[in-house]
Image 1 (spheres, one colour):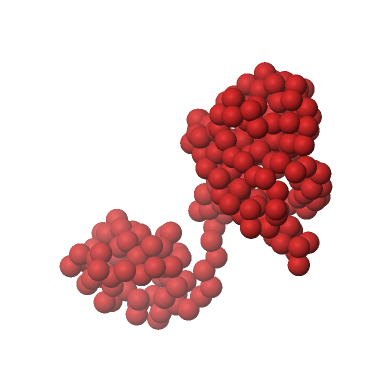
Image 2 (tube, one colour):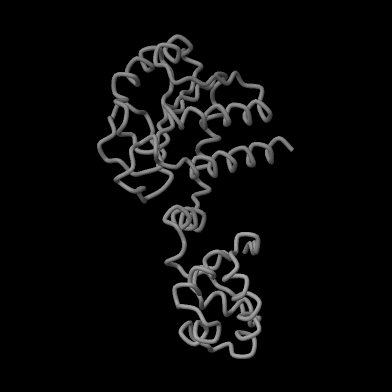
Length: 236
């Protein structure tokens, strides 16, 4: 909660000088009565409450009457609900499988496009601190193919797996005898069978109206941090 009185205009300051004491003396007061006592409209009270960063008048009353404020499920964004569900159902086995594959190879290529590539740069930075393997990041097929050999494991990170056709890319990497693993946030049954293995991080999907580059990568970062944490634990 962030109370910033500097944003209040003269009318709202007058409300603020009176209403908290009114609420404290009558925790069950409704917004109509509050507006009447302050000599303003209901919309003025509502706007004042929002400016103080409260979701609604009920939450405002709880705060100034000393009650406990709980966040209504409707007030949580879809992203936070998704993360909450992901954390509650986190698959530790997937982290172990990821590390098992990681440990088998001397060279690791982290491939991603757009925002996913930025995630891979962060992942590579963290992996460098916990392993002595050769870690590469790229969003160029030609560079990945050039680097790949029989001692290479290629992790391809993608939210949907639908923005890029992986079949030809995976086939080229397999020609170089590299191992290919696709890490997807969302379940996608249409992904090519050219991929040796697929890790699905969630069973949910993000808003279908969002373009691939507009979708969040929060789940990637959570998974990455748990992989790094487990590797650090093993090193210690």
